[in-house]
Length: 164
Image (cartoon, rainbow, N blue to C red; front, side, top):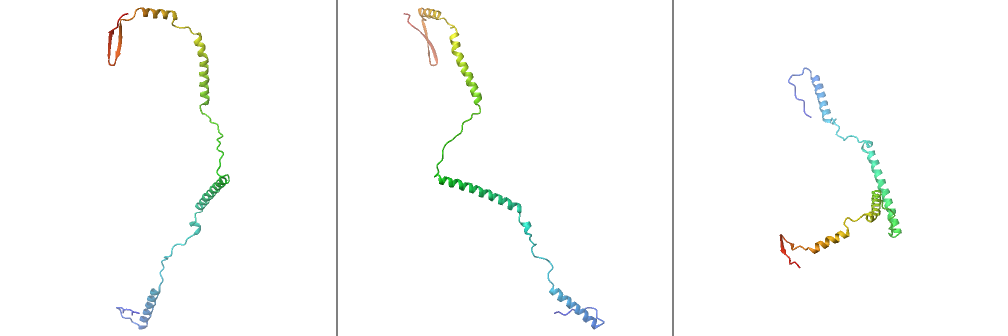
């Protein structure tokens, strides 16, 4: 141990000086043997705060759904293995049209028109009389045209035909 440095002021009493030195030495020993007061340990962990019970519950529900789906799939595979993969292959469904009613109405309308049409044809009178048509054709045949038009690509020309 180091000796205490001498004070600048002289002591009046040696006993008093020893008492002061002794208390100072005790103080130095206490400082040397002092333990640190700063707590460097990690904080205490509370398990009920670390466990997230909602997450655990959600995970458990998800796993139960997966297990149920796996069980159903296993049942399907087992039944397929038992029946050796045979399927009935029947499609027992009827096709339903969204515009069936309107199509039926249009069909009925056309049917009615088709029934009325032959009746109209029978009851109508001809516009051109056959006798008058024959007369017109005879008149045309008796006076043929002396010129005949021929149309060619890009040009139009006429030439005379011999009169019989």
